[in-house]
Image (tube, rainbow, N blue to C red):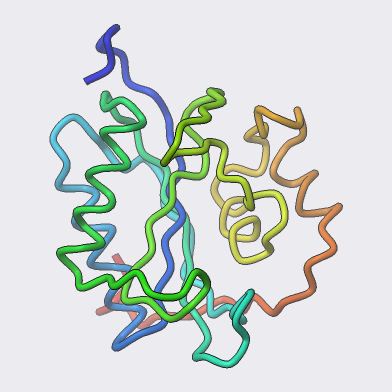
Length: 174
């Protein structure tokens, strides 16, 4: 728990391209929502996205959730990695296929550089598949390292990879 006990607003990027990626993303959101001391306060739509870094694989499904948590960033990372492991995530290739990928994008306005944790996420400002869903729920959130809003980053983006909105039927949408 944070030393001051206060909640902090965080954004988590979610992605999957194995098995049933839509279900994987929705299940991970349910698992994040089950955290003690954390509450989901926003969720983007789901997007079908072109793979980055390793193009010869299935397209991904991506989204972003906003949470309020009392966990320290390092504890939140441990919880997210446990969810990934419990959902069958195997860490083989850096940009390879995955059952689920959960990344802390922003942790309030904090800049954290530790051996196994860098916040803001070091690729956040370069990736359309993150910035499009991020702008859907928090276009005016400021990147603490650059002092630019998410919308400003998206407008400056050179990444041209496809990001397509997924329309879900009412029985699937949460």
